[in-house]
Length: 391
Image 1: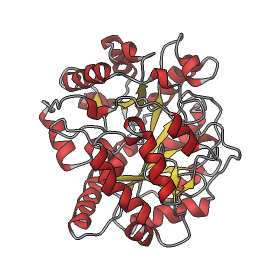
Image 2 (image 1 turned 90 degrees about the vertical axis):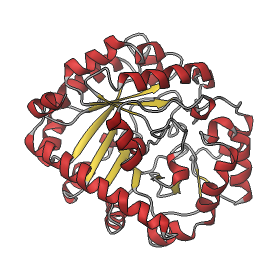
Image 3 (image 1 turned 45 degrees about the vertical axis):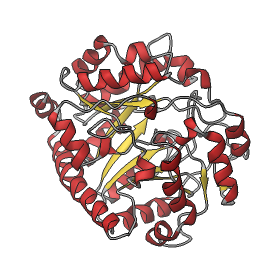
Image 4 (image 1 turned 180 degrees about the vertical axis):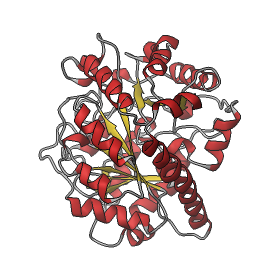
């Protein structure tokens, strides 16, 4: 795998990945841990939704159905990045909507060459021109969402020809020499594909460096709860990932279990937080409530003093080590209501939706299965806990 990466990756992209992401990322995580020991809090990573605009209509998307589409201004994005860098953290996940619809995006990447950005994209707009721009910058890894084969992708994504366009995006990104990842939100309609050796080997043959598995979360205007995995299916996924890490020449990432197989929530650990396209500071993208916005106060002051965020991190572990929005949505609705939290969904009905949502299993519903690959154990224990997924 290392030989393949060295052969296929542009040298500048490889350097930025090793230095900006690897070395500086590890240092940033260490600083995060030291802050926690001193009773100070500021997340190790930020996930930033730069725009609500999107060209697809996916099942379980938290952006669909907003009464008004919002975007962060370039000045707001710059402020978030600068304040985060001041705390020694240089890794950012860039989300949407579809972030490639955000016109100032390349300028953001160019303005911060000392950072590393993970670009969460559906891939349909990732053309050779954009890939070449990203290659010249070197500090971006596209994470391309792959939700199924020809028979599933269009239904899952609410578009036409999505499977073909996704494959073309992967080939374009790899062909440009980018560190390229593929993400899959595993649900009932695509779990067989997700756990297929043919699927993974196909990605390896294309030159994909890493594969990131999420567990489908039923959120948004079209939550499609029936797609949520059962406990048995989550157990099957977990076992497969542990075995696959020593079997396939590709990095396999999750963000739900630590090195001993214990469930965790990146938002509860404080590892990552999400800033949406309206500037609201949320625990994660699927918990669409907030009491603070970017620009009202310095981020460090907000994180240290936010009653809503701090009490959420304290109380969720008393309910579950998994995903609270799946396991106890009614509790989350009542918690948000008791804190007079703003509904940041843009739909104005998130409390009502959560109260009507049935409980579904999350990653805490299965027994602990420890990592067996020593490199993954080390990475999860010392580095990123799977890099802190947005879910």
